[in-house]
Length: 381
Image (tube, rainbow, N blue to C red; front, side, top):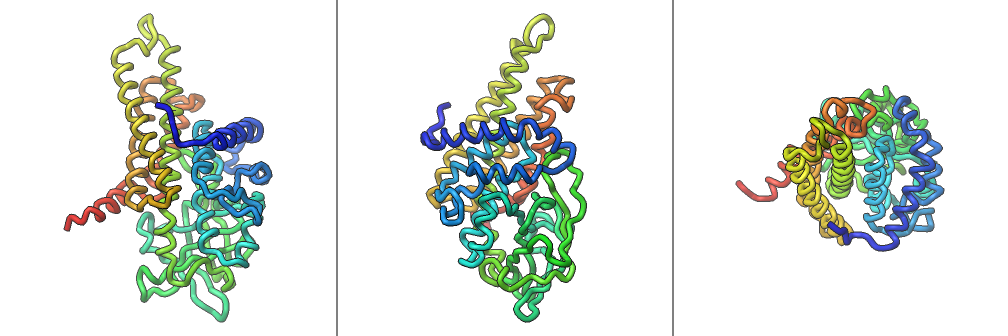
């Protein structure tokens, strides 16, 4: 089905980003898979070529265009190339809105130029060892001491955790106020008491640095409070829909890539004297998967339009996130089955897709949490 989402300028941007991936990522990604982290030099090159901070005003070195379609292009091409180590989507899709909408003028001057150049790599620390999708269960605590905050606690599963230069930390600042007692503090590399634990050994996304972070009496200057004190939970709820759409974009692109790879495989692979694709079961399975892939693509593209128009609700984003990622897992499982034993071999793209995809229904809010968000909106009781 022909897509109508993009304009000619997006197509040119896509072509440019593909060249960037071919030249600067493809030759090195296998090495980064082994080391568990992407070379920081890649971030500098991405910034140089305009692939970081597309929505950031030009005065700070950004693209000056608030249009999520550019973000989608980067996510789609990164996903289809299976370059899962790149943390650009977190940087552009998740962190940028916090800095653009919540940072004051002084903070923007301090952080945004490096954000766009690749000199400052970003992360956000929500999840803790004892809390997953239950953000109100966060125990990391920050206590006011003069003009500063003294931060204590631990976070885990933090994307860009090793490379990050600034981390937006969700912390309790007034436990008596419940959901209105959380604030966002920006912790910077080198602050005493801020330590990075191990680079976590995941079953997939091997080149993506995902770390444990700890904070022991970290003195965070008052000027590093992001947004309004006590409004941290509200700030999160306002920004999570775009994060979830970013994950849905990834799911749709992964489905298309895996389907294309599998169709080519069953054309070439023979069994019982003829291509696997000539078998009726194979045709029926792929017909079903092609239909579902198209349905996911139509929904995701429509919701990208709503996001750009400012009309995407939290419930819409939850629908896109859970459904696209569950369909992604189902498709990849069935495509791997069609590869037979070769699908279990790591050198085949479908095997890597299988391992990389499993976290899609977990991070950004689990499928169960997404359904809860939607269910509550239906006012059933």
